[in-house]
Length: 167
Image (cartoon, rainbow, N blue to C red; front, side, top):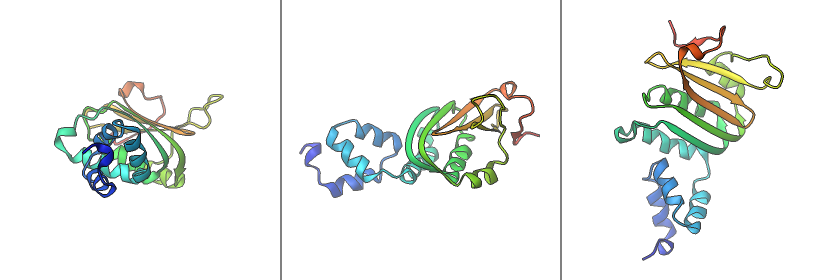
């Protein structure tokens, strides 16, 4: 039996047990399989469940880099990622391309007031800084259609910016 002959119900059941990376690998196997996966799992919240399982799985505690494209992301999604990335000692960066950012006002409640650089052309940039357990810093940069989450050194934080979680 080839991959194209596998019944749709079996494929759906299979995808429920795969984590995010395994789904991406499976997606690259064939055009028909890619179309089926995109049709079946287009929602970011479903992907977040896979990422959550990935973080809780000891063999995948070495996540360091990622690039994702999503149609929509919410304040809760970003808070979830922030919380989990802060627990990963190997985390380096993640870029998320999005079309819709839901609940920006709730993001301000969750993260506090952003640090804003007042330079021409940078007025739509919002930054937050969060302390990692090893004293490095998670820099979250929010710009229209992209979110950058990056581990930086404490001395790279601009003067006047608050690092959440610092003494």
